[in-house]
Image 1: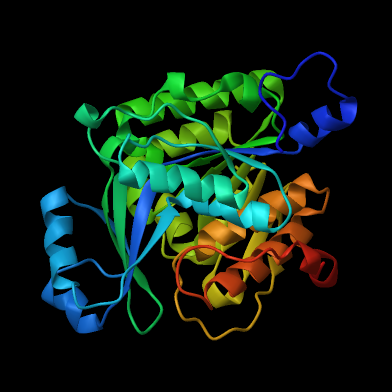
Image 2: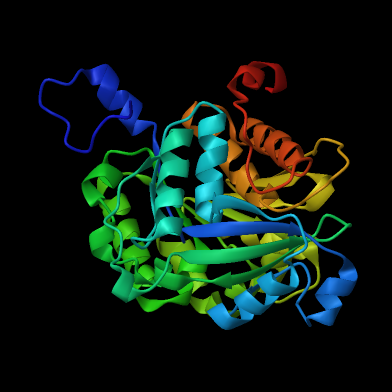
Amino acid sequence: MLVSARLSENKTSVQVEKQKKAVFGIGNALVDTLAFVSDDFIREHDLSKASMTLVDPATQGRLLNALQHHELELRSGGSAANTMFALVRSGGSAFYTGKVARDSNGEFYREDLLRAGIHFDIHPAAPSEGNTGTCLVMTTPDAERTMCTHLGVSTALSVGDVDLNRLARSHIVYLEGYLWDADRPRAACEAAMEAARSSGVQIAYTFSDSFCVDRFRDDYSRILKDYIDILFCNAAELTSFFQTDDFSAALSLLSTKARLAFVTHGADGAYVLEAGRIEHVAGFPVDPLDTNGAGDAFAGGVLYALCAGHSAPQAARWGNFLAGKIVQVRGPRLEEDVAHLVATIL
């Protein structure tokens, strides 16, 4: 059982140290509906392939109606939650904060995280405030995923929903860039980063998506300088951030600004930027089925390895391994534990 935020004074130092190695994730709590579709389906419905688009419930409903003869699967998701799943499957400890409603999707979400061993304790929003957020994830034969998201009450996440005492006793706080889309979650992120900085907790952040980078470039630059200890992004997000098509040049620029950064580059693996140095860590050759959640799994693997005391390049190798595992299955998360493989891979 994970150590409670209300540790009594007679708890042992061993239990406190275990808590210190936990990761506190904050993100949009979304119930994913997974579907495999053709490229024609994406074109016919004028969807932006391989990206995430915010939609209203009516649009999402029309798409679901068009998919009524497809096989659909439900998963508890959201980028940061997927990362916490990868972390606990590696053998790590995770807390998660994301806003759900008091509805069937919210209860499904809560039970799913608790079954996986992720501590999830948040007061759900009343039905009058809206529904739990949902994301329709459509995967095409080339393994690319196209997402249509209705954020629902996830945008109601506020400072009061974040257990700052528990956060202060964690090793790392991990935040997703998608939260920057709404005022209240953005304020919650700022408060969490301030609390982490005051408590000596490392701050990890993912840019999440190129469209987030395009909208919030100035804010991202500010928090990269003032708060972020560990940055996650992919090649597209990186080049968008520096507004260049030159990936190598963007890597060099980031190496002068980031304390520690992990930049994923598809099948090529990842780049580790640390203390001004750039190191490539090769990926694992696989035949991808579904790229949904690959970046999230990579981040979870990295966070686990860093908490376990491994070097940044070793952490990237474990992250690459998990990303390679996740693209071979349907959906954004691993269903089986992989902790027994850490020693073999690293």
